[in-house]
Image (cartoon, rainbow, N blue to C red):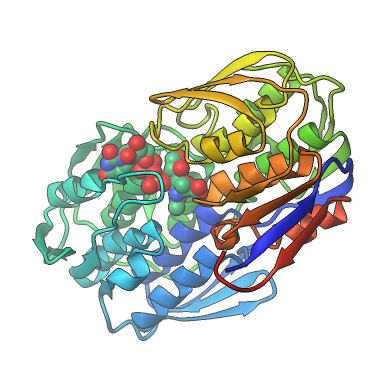
Length: 420
Ligand code: EPZ
């Protein structure tokens, strides 16, 4: 398993280009199951999770081919309607094939996703929504067996705002007979990207961008092309790198309108930001002002930026708290940051951070995607050498992060090889 070796305290300068959004691609790709034909999904990032989704779709008979940053998808020969455990255990987003398969083929056999590195990840809202649409849902040795002659439009009100359940149920409802209302729908930009793609395929969806969707089912959809939105979490991660390491960087090819919760807190932390149409320039503050955050659904502060923010606050001038209300157990990065000299106390889902003057390089272990990003950020800031082990977690959601950071002046090297 690869590791990164970082020599810290280098100031960052220059421009970093942001790729397509992982969490948009992981919904757009299975949406192609809804109609046979050829698709072009542009700005699709080259990530481990995208490769996993491609492999899963290929086991169903889909062909995918990369042409630069465009992913070409052909769904003429879908002949298998299941997502085996070996794929789902690697990536929970595999469950996104459930809605399209039941809607288009009337059946699906999808492994229940296990937990993830930081805890249980239930799918009850996905299953309850499909049942409300008229699907039969049975469980058989860890698999979800879903069947439906034809789904029927209905009213669904999510008890919790869920990105995945909103995407899955929307992809099921577009081919249902009749109209479906979805209340308390997620409004993350990745869901808007998906819903706009479904409309391009002929779906009839009203209320896109709001928490109440009305979907008039149609008998059939047709292929369409789609452009993947920029990855707001990669952009946010790079902005935090800019704030932590000193210097001035330009985060290019991003969508600043997707990042206002993060940019406003960075300004509160003392960073100087210049916000353009599709780029954000950040000048690091001399002193980082402590800023408390509470994560929430979009457009609030994203849980996927929580770990990175704790890294930043670990070198702020004063105390701060970070509360994660979405995932109350997503703090595997905290003990690793403490190894780097951070002073953080954890009580349930509240991290209390006392900023320190400096972090000291050490060996730390990646546990999940965003926790790994937090460790990289801290290593860039720390004095001396930091080794971040098991960086395959990072490769799931960041495209060649070490190359992008090196271009900004960081000293970070990937070392391939043995079990660490
Ligand atoms: C998506 O996961 C993202 N993944 C996650 O990003 C992100 O952290 C999360 O949304 C929240 O924004 C993808 O889009 C592939 P949820 P998802 O359903 O859809 C509870 C990353 O780092 N819930 O919005 O799985 C759940 O426990 C990843 O890129 C239920 O209770 O998240 C959580 O508390 C990590 N029952 C809350 O809802 C359900 O059936 C939000 O989860 C589903 C969810």
